[in-house]
Length: 272
Image 1 (spheres, rainbow, N blue to C red):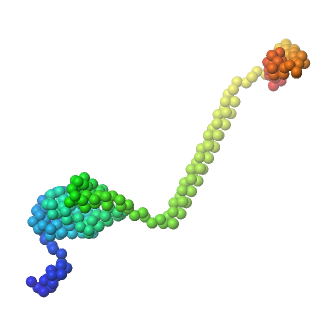
Image 2: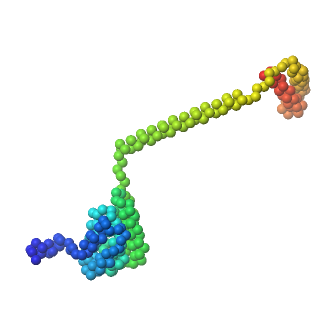
Image 3: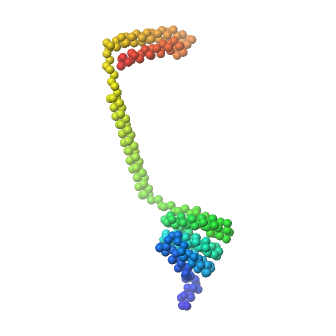
């Protein structure tokens, strides 16, 4: 063993690299289907054989994929991590969720630029752990990961004043277009109504011209009736005693008034 190798191991500067890391690289490759489970049993065996060292290495390898990998590697890492929790021994379950792995999960949950499918998968994984371990005191830290990541809200994008002004102008332009369209439609309806009115007036049957000689007897009769009704109304008004009744309460006055109005109609028609 060289002095350099001994020094690195002595000061723990070089992290352990075994078949566990190799399996993680293989199982997160781009050509592997997202929900595939082939190879995971072999990874489980390797972790169980190495105990806590295997757990630390697996957690570290998956954390790197979650933190620095593409969306496919992140998705695959979540699938693998869920399978390991379900199939590895108790040592893995109680110690895999170290601070660095937890931070990686938090980063994905709170990153507004992260792949939505990855975030959805993460949420499903955390929910399953919460339901599976919520009554197990030894798995409390794993169960509470759901609460920790659930409350993270994606960062809101910074507001660009130029974009806000542009949006405001677009809104004003759209409003002007809408108003102009509405006014045009209103004018069209008004014009259509006027044309319809003119058409109806044009098609209305014309009244026969007035023939005075033919209508003279009726005219004279109507004048006489109107004159008589007018005289009766005047007489009725004259006979009203203001101290005992009013014109409105006098039945005779109201009756004569109604007859006078009725007699007036033919006269008005002849005048028109």
